[in-house]
Image 1: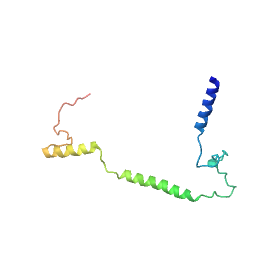
Image 2: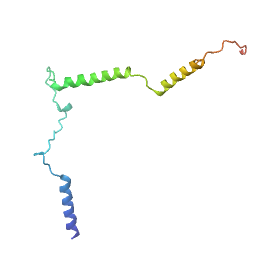
Image 3: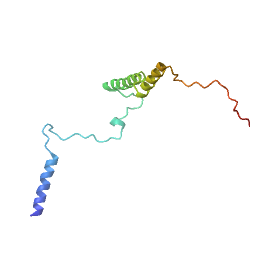
Image 4: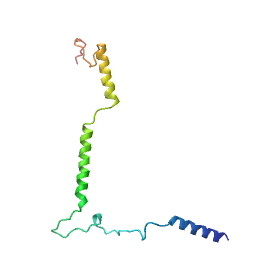
Length: 115
């Protein structure tokens, strides 16, 4: 009794897992591996490979986008908190009349040691 119940439950769960394919009418396609790079057989010696229509568009789009992104990143405005705080501190110190750059003292001290 228990074996028949479990076998029925397994069969019903297997059919639920497989599901129904309403929109497709045939088995899914599977391209068998050929061992060639990208599945293309190399052309005979002395002949060039014929490119497909989309390949040049893809290469131009890919490298064009990378070039555009690099130019935009190079000229991107500096919006970091550190640069804003440094600029703000310099303005406040200048407004108070303080110097914001270190200047060594010009007085010479005779505390040099000779060895």
